[in-house]
Amino acid sequence: MKYISVAEAAKRMGVSERTVRGYCADGKIPDAFLTGKTWNIPETAQKPARANKKVSKPETLLDILRMEKKQKLSGGIYHKIQVDLTYNSNHIEGSRLSHDQTRYIFETNTIGFENGAVNVDDVVETANHFKCIDMIIDSANYPLSERFIKELHSVLKSGTSDSRKDWFVVGDYKKVPNEVGGRETAGPEKVHRLMDELIKSYNQSSKKTLEDIIEFHYEFESIHPFQDGNGRVGRLIMFKECLKNKIVPFIIDDDLKYFYYRGLHEWKSEKGYLIDTCLTAQDEFKKYLDYFKIPY
Image (cartoon, rainbow, N blue to C red; front, side):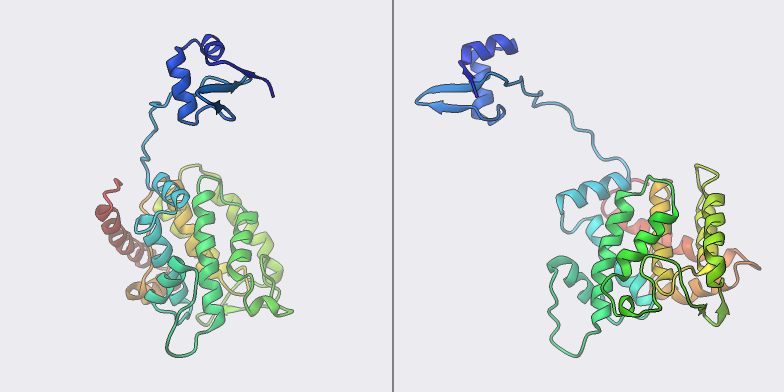
């Protein structure tokens, strides 16, 4: 590599020699080095970008989540969503980990429980759910697709005891008929067609309302495309689609669990039950946003 003097660099960049020395001292010119008191500057060096260039401030919840995720910020809205959404969604499906245990796993990436036995699947699915939340934040603005839905399921169920069962398919649709809450769901032979139709129908309009998102959730849960994990994948999709459409998202917690089940069961005859439940959860989520001073 050939080097030039401060004077030559200043001439090429159209700035003063003092400014070039400042660039070097601040590390803004890669590979520049001192010999005694003389700066040696690569002849290929470019004028650094302006240091006072304005950085746009995050404006939406999605922008803030992405910023806090990138910065690995502790104690912010990203942190709270990771813990609360993971705890509540897993708890609805039977996880026995407490909220504190869930938070401990997220914050330390370790297991430190003093009393009693812990179900390994609960721990694995908790860690996996954290990754799923990162996925929906990263991919929030992309249209919903079959591939993305299957990837969510693959990440959620990877490494669980279910993944070692011959009849259980991780990241793909079910092979064995199942039911939910005593109600029949779509047979395995119908799932691909029904999911394809559902996703295409949903993606016909670019702007979704909260009711559109909830209706997709009902249809998704009615098909019940996976052998297990449908509820958690479905609720992750709702959260993603709220972020995409700048709708305040929500978390179904323990207090709302049975109202949520009732809403799914009664959707065909009375949509208001499920919509009201989601609106109640949305009001609770607004308290988070108020606390962190995030506009909505």
